[in-house]
Image (tube, rainbow, N blue to C red; front, side, top):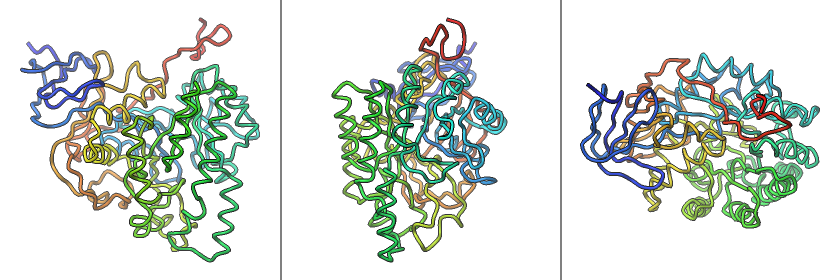
Length: 465
């Protein structure tokens, strides 16, 4: 009689070590046992040779609804499943529905649940006209973190939160223990540099980087971390393209403050002088892609332990919004869910960075960040059996040929990947087989942080303490 529902044997990547010829055993959707040697019997048993067995990734930054009638959760979670991402954390800037109240959170959960093929958590934000008044109710509704911006792309969908209001929001979040994440571009500085670029007549690929030079990021990062220090709120920069930014965060941590920075996979992969020059609007991202020397600096920050987590900042704009010859007229952002895991594994191994560290940045730390580590983030007994298997088979990435993206373009097209996702499991159930997604819409669940803080006699789930 089989003891387990599923057993996978291969090179198992654990939080503290790598176990060659190890196995992961699953029962009732949970990791039940980790071992080495002859694997036990199971209803389903796969001996995978030299394949890598890692925890399913948690993508901390996804925009499923930025463009109406475009991607939606039906496609973003399909791309996630195909790429070994078993949980996405969706941003609150949905076209036509800023997620800034408990009602908006519930509406989004109800909208996403029938579509989701992987698990999902949600960010909340605020309407600048309301301020922090609804933060508490969004915590009770289950948001996993909050997101703000020091730059305003749109006054309603993606508004700037000025310093005094940012301080008030951080102060309201601090007692909950959740993190305040912020888009790090100084509004006044960016607008001044944009005007300079427009006056210069430069409209090609160079325009974007010139309109957002490094100082625009670094000024904002000081504002963000100093606001966190002032309010005792965990402060997080949701993306940073500059090594200097990670040094700033480290200095705040050295002084005893909770200050973290996220690195997106595009900043570790693409560069301005080659990729942005070649791709134009299809590589327009805020903050911008920097020079190749900066890419390698960021990899050093990964190796040094100064990067808290890695994400995609995924958004699948339709191609007509990314191909304007006037660089600044294009939408900002790129898709990446299907390829983040193999890209990061490739880059880490090429630079001698251990797979345990790669798993930490893509799974364990994101789980801690969003207070989901009671169920997610590692191949540890008792946690959800969210697993990605990568086989040593070289492929050349092509977003159009996989069939798992609503758009057929990607800035990563043509990159050779030595490790390829061959299977993904969500709570012990296989949801992909090579590039075929098996998960039906509705397979994923809304996941919310574990209540930890007591506020005025109640925990943050609203239950009496």
